[in-house]
Amino acid sequence: MKKIGIIGGTFDPVHRGHISLAMDAKNQVGLDEVMFMPAKTQPFKLNKQMTSPEDRIAMLRLATEYLQGINVSTVEMDLEGISYTYRTLRKLRETIDPSDKLYFITGTDTYLKIGIWKEADEVLRENAFIVGERPGYKGEELRECKCMYEETYGTETIIIKNVRLDISSTEIRKRISEGRQVVDLIPEGPGRYIYENQLYR
Image (cartoon, rainbow, N blue to C red; front, side, top):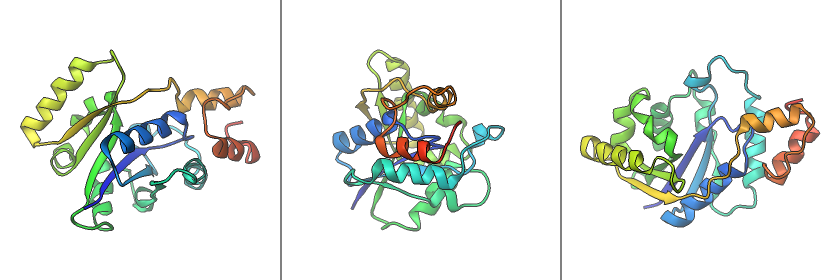
């Protein structure tokens, strides 16, 4: 049985905070593999313009190419329609061994909102979760939510310590559009790709 972690998002662009969460989850939980899974169209970002799927996938592959056990999956990109997590995880299960265990990796804020996701009960019943916790940030609320999901759905949730970097993709895009440096916010490969392809200008 393999333990596989999944990190979803738009990754527009991928940044060092995303990589930090993936590495912390892999190391602290002993995952065999972590997959970055970029969304084609997120339900909460329907009115926002995104960089092309090809560019976002290319940046992710550059960011992870030298990280052992960290990969990029296009399963969600290949599905038609809105990128709902339950559909993605259903499709992913068709491509892995039935004995493999999936862990959805996320931060505290996202974990607290899973209950409003489409088909949330299916997502919570059939998958485990790894939550990156920032010291002193919504700790009590996180643990109350963890207990509620466990009692209601039998959801396994593992809370890890994640040295969260105060970075957002929105801030990175803004900096680039203003001609400011982002070398401290994103890995070298994606940074070079953004410069060469004039993204976010």
